[in-house]
Length: 246
Image (cartoon, rainbow, N blue to C red; front, side):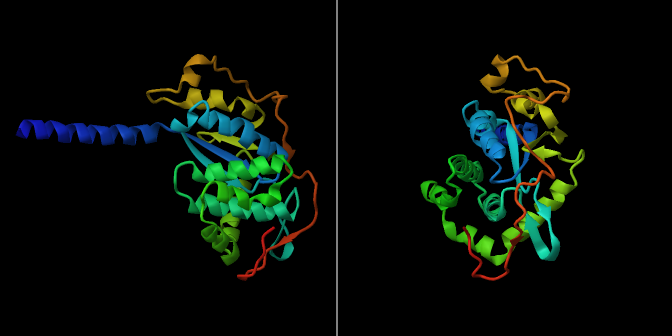
């Protein structure tokens, strides 16, 4: 009996070790984007989300979402977001979601829902995404109104502005800290090639995985370039509990 119990303990420890190794094997994927950029929305909804959940790459990916993109810091604590002040507000909402929703995939599902609304021209209905996903709105609203989300965004701004090589457009994708640059459309291939663990998703086994040398833009993807002026209306965050959201 003692021997049997010992075997169970060993099996349990091996299971934990395997789980730990699986996490260590996961491929780090970072997406630098801005919330109302239609090309970012398209990438999140029609490419990244489908790869994660339809191709099951979520099982081998450690995903980071960084909502700042091409936003510029202006005078007197103002921001200039490429797609207007609404984008600045929703960037903060998404930053709060990333910080407050630790459940696997829940923050991504919320962001994906908001970005889908943006593609449909309905970004002002973003609260409906929290309702459909049964997410309590109060912590996210508190995060926005307290200034916590504003400070989260400033951290994302600093991270984005110190990328090496510097980002030139959004969506900007990194796989294991390597910028895919113009070849970001082949992100599935890069993820599969980078994954060295066991139990590769079927998508990685079936596809011929080819990547190019970043010299040619993937013609099926469009981008918003850094410094490309679209809106010049400044966003001015007011640090008080009555700060309104769109």
